[in-house]
Amino acid sequence: MLAALAGTIEVAPPFFRHSRQRGTGYELDAIAAVVLGGTSLAGGKGRIFGTLIGALILGFLNNGLNLMGVSSYYQMIVKAVVILLAVLVDNKSSK
Image (cartoon, rainbow, N blue to C red; front, side, top):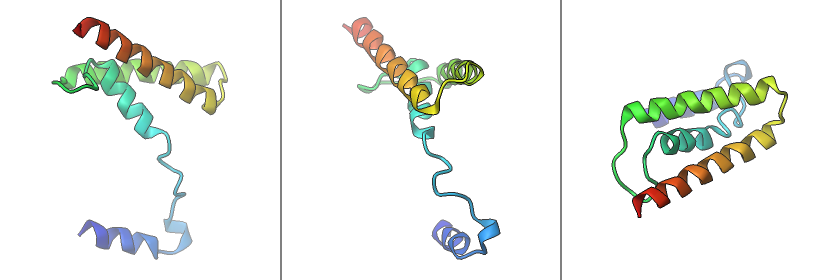
């Protein structure tokens, strides 16, 4: 069913289509929100409330970086550093 819908959208007139690059970078945001929310990348249980808090933190971070005029490339680097720090803290706390 979804494949048929995707095929229909693919052959639709150009004014119905969007760029294929539209969702680029959202996977990093999703991982960062989950990791900031306390879910371990090594496995384990996560909580929805923690993920919501992680998403809020990430939203504040994105908004602040946008207001400061930071380039999107550097924003991705900052998010990657935040993920690394969260993973390091998780590794230290699990030992």
